Amino acid sequence: MKKKPEDILYELREQVANKVFAKIGPIRKFPEDFLDEKTKKELAGPVKYPSVFAKDPPAAGKLRRDKKPLKSGIKIVGRYHKVVREKIDPKAINEALEMLKEWEKGAGVKYEEVLLPEGELKLNLGRKFEICSAKSGMTFLKFDSLEKTKYVLYCKKKGQLVYKIPKDEGAIEKAVEDYEKYLEEIREKLKKAFMKRRADRKIAEYLADEVMKEI
Image (cartoon, rainbow, N blue to C red; front, side, top):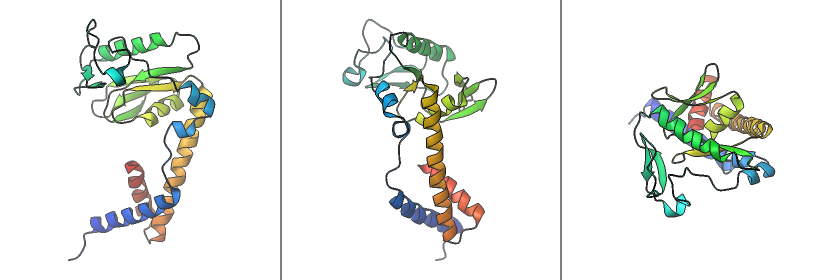
């Protein structure tokens, strides 16, 4: 039975990707693998949760009985809080963010915390750099710095809603720069590997981009 073109491309992608990553080794993680030791120590403290959560959410995982959950779309589910519907009330998000900002007033805090819902996000270039829902277009965060915006997007992980950002702009810029350089190096290795297997430049670039999306 003759193979379909898409099956041939898939097999080529898998073979080349496995071979390249076998040489590269474990994929480095952002941001921990791209921050200096001083900044990592500053971020090492436990994540602060709003007062609606128990003092030790990962251990207790329960809502304090004397408090009500955040309004509209955010509630406690098991050990974690998460968005429970696609459309989120911006007012509820802003209330949560204001609570997060209050904790930063403590002496010696060298990072800020931001709250993001689950789901795919995108970067929107307006008067400021905005992080929006890829599905609804709703804006969740705005920054003056492109590097800071990229930092938050690169940090995004499934099941995580609270993210720490260093207040040191230099640390952010270096981490983002090093990470993007690292990703480009992997992409170039993949592209060259595909071209060695007789894929033309456009196909090689397409396949390299597909593999990068998967990782």
